[in-house]
Image 1 (cartoon, rainbow, N blue to C red):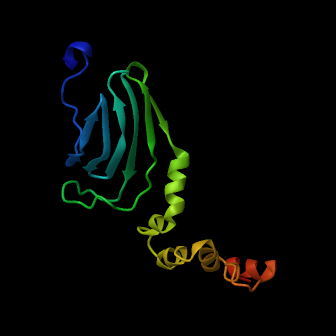
Image 2: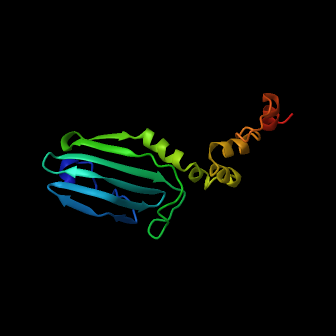
Image 3: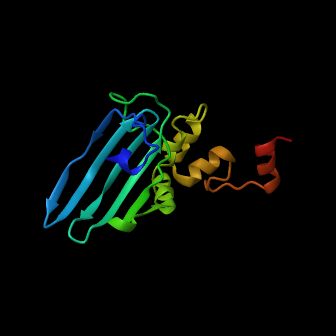
Length: 163
């Protein structure tokens, strides 16, 4: 038991999550999962990967995402938030956990508007992201969005900072 291994364990610790689901397939000793989902207050976690049983290795990616909701069960699973994928790899006796920062950036680049969903007053910027980088630049600094018209650096400075 855990208490026999760790004398300081009193059994009182618990993880509060409302829902854990996923389907697993086993084929020729390889466990595969592509739809892991954990819903808890303030966090959502998705995961996918494989666990080859004979060589006792793991190749899995989990994506925890902090969200602005205390709802667990019955709460939305697709709330806006920033997910940082974590790669879980290696043999069972020496598993490594590495944040996949490139994956996190790639996710944000594919949908930059999702970052702005819960930011008060950012509606215009979110709409501008649908027009690509040029539309976003035009909202932040009018005339710089690649619409063919160019302004002098002095005009751009005035647009950003006033006089």
